[in-house]
Figure 1 (spheres, rainbow, N blue to C red):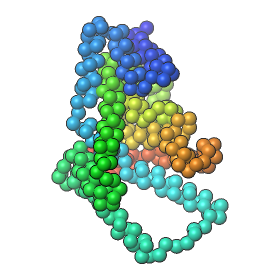
Figure 2: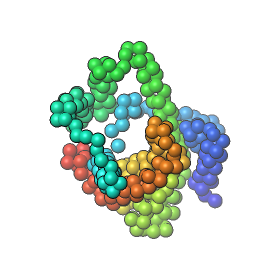
Figure 3: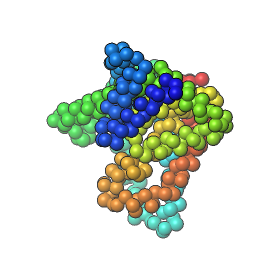
Figure 4: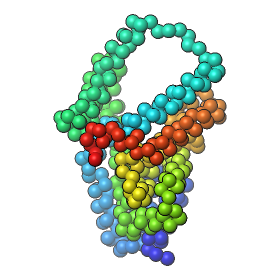
Length: 326
């Protein structure tokens, strides 16, 4: 048995066991990777390398932006929204839903005017980045400053709310940064053993048809997304799947959006589906009735996913037109 396979077995088995025991994902990923490293290197070298990768994984200026916002495909998002809106309209018409009344023009105008300051946030961020005024990370800080001012003007928050908001943001950032750092250990182990190449070779030995391969990837990511949070899933599966996609010319941007859509679908599907359960709690409805109503929407969203997967222009058109990629 090759070193890569031995290491993979140790890492995967430990990861599954710890997750089944209820250990947090970040600790499970980091500990299983560190132990797997012992299969290849002496203990002192393994622990030193793990610590170094943990630091290197989080020592990135770009990660500061996590605290503020995540910017992940306008056209795919718009397409997703349009498909769902069309289906909702068809369903409403079929069931005879009618509007309670029309909004007066002055109310609509007043609502639009009230929304302009908030909508300007998008213009400031995108315009500043494309105009070279600030970087994406700096734009996140500008966004927070602007949004904070608006929140005070709209009386959405008070000064006494700021410590709690900052603490919550710092806590969330710490969780994500820890996950990235610990996942860096796993990425190093996989790269050192050549595990991604081994997996890629195994998949490519089954078929060279890129359409079949992409379907297999989508199925795996959809299943994973139903029980795993998107952040660790991206960090774990990107080093494995990206090299395969690059062999048949898929751009990393398109790949990233495809992965993100798959994992986002998982947030609205059982058994974990954090967004789905939150929506049910807010609406005070049971999960069974909601899932039954969502089935047609799942079908429509999967069609959108396939369009994004197989039509590069949906993901690439805007960044290419903006000159961000070639």
